[in-house]
Image (cartoon, rainbow, N blue to C red; front, side, top):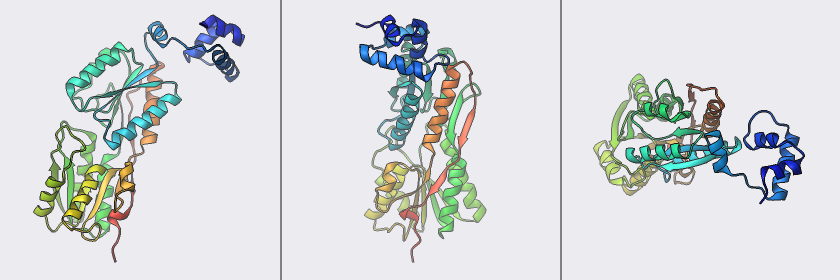
Length: 329
């Protein structure tokens, strides 16, 4: 079995130089990197990741804790973060908490035992204070954090404002904001604030309704949505705080023989893939997930390299217009 010394000899470099390349430390020329890669391939050399992590007291793993992997939004987030992490030489340790606090705590301990280089939290922990003891940088994704933890979020207030302005601009005057029951306060709550304030500014009726989803993000909510629509028969516009709810609104409207967009116009949030394949396709608020992931990994990498950041980065959102809010002659 080839050793580090064998690779160094084959590449014509010092063992210390090869070690720096494998551990991504300091400046190394591209020529040296290429020679090491060629030598490793020729000798079929596989670095011992466990030994390297023990030597450095950390690995090249980033812990990514999400509440659900089967939710289209979090699937997209995972994909973007994994891609950007890979580009930076990191690998993802994916943890699915299913919104259970006990699981979150278990996964945090797993991250500790695996000597992760950093953690990205996409779940609803009540507090991030305990992360100070981990000794690794933490990024909060779309959740409130304290001053010691950097965070990444979209401009949710702007998202609610854009949704209200668009529906009102399409002639809607009896609107519903359709949210989900919150476990704790989250940045996404600001969508309602932006929507409510814009409706008030224009003198438009706005009802605020909540769908009780418990721990299941993707369950069938047609019965609850049906009751809400029957409660407000004059409704001509709905802003759902995620695309799954928006799709379920459209399905429920079809069951009740309420045409969309002729009678009710619908807007979602996130711009996940299903917004493009429903009938009608769904107007939505797009989060710039790629840009958010790039920035999250950049912040994490900078902190891992010894320059901690407590930046709270907010990214603008855009309205993507599709068939569910189309003008009808």
